[in-house]
Length: 370
Ligand code: MRU
Image (cartoon, rainbow, N blue to C red; front, top):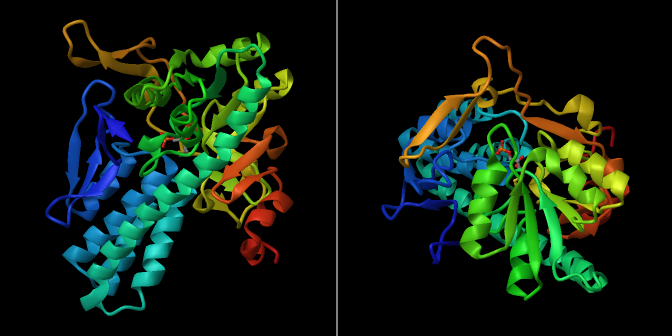
């Protein structure tokens, strides 16, 4: 997608052909800063400290982390060390495990002398696959937006509510939840996005708003608590969110607060869709509430807030009384019964085992108990 009119991806190989270049997302929307990842430790730090974030981008960064590790030392021992190090960075997004296991399985049978080249080639392929997958998600989601627009009668726009950031910044390009919106905008459908601010890290207020703005998509940032009110007053036509892990029966784990939006959507008859690529489906689990590890992050993300001060400097200030305990659960699980449909690269399906298997029949044997 575009940054100041220039096509940009969230992760790319540097001109020297070996370092990975990422956008430091902790600095957006106020500063656009590119950073070089030159070794395994930096790739792990980038994921853990959320310079990069979003399930597909975490996977793509981990793939380059494995390549960087192989460049330094392609031994069996270092292959295992790199896989362990990257897997320990963030627990919830299953794309991390998917990418690390994919890289490990392909590199393990190769001799150390050819591992580095193979690792870079596969990391690049994972990125290209992600772009194509998200574009396909966009095309399937576009049809939903087209129908909403056609059904809208006198309405002058389609209003979509989204939570967190599942746009191109969360993937290599296009995004999952936001890909249909970009394609709708390009197709001349007047789409407007309600962007939940998404406390505590404000991915909606800082990242979703920024990337929509760069592409010229009309949007409005709202407090996380506003969605229910907007839905009660007919101001949301549909919700589209992303996911960090979707179970084989269609339970959806996503950024904390997603569940409350799904409840409000259900109560108000607003369709609630989830955009996701195949690697976000965890076929080995069913019950998301019990089986998905929910990341708990540093409480300072809740007790403090960062923004631009009046003299244009980025500043962090405390919100809570000194000493008040805080909790920071980073994700929640929306049960499948609250999800209208899953928008995948292969089409839209109900959030059920049968629905998912109708699109991914080859995964029948990946499910537990089969
Ligand atoms: O903590 P984050 O910013 O990595 O959380 C990101 C989300 O919750 C996204 O909605 C999800 O990863 C889907 S990204 C296409």
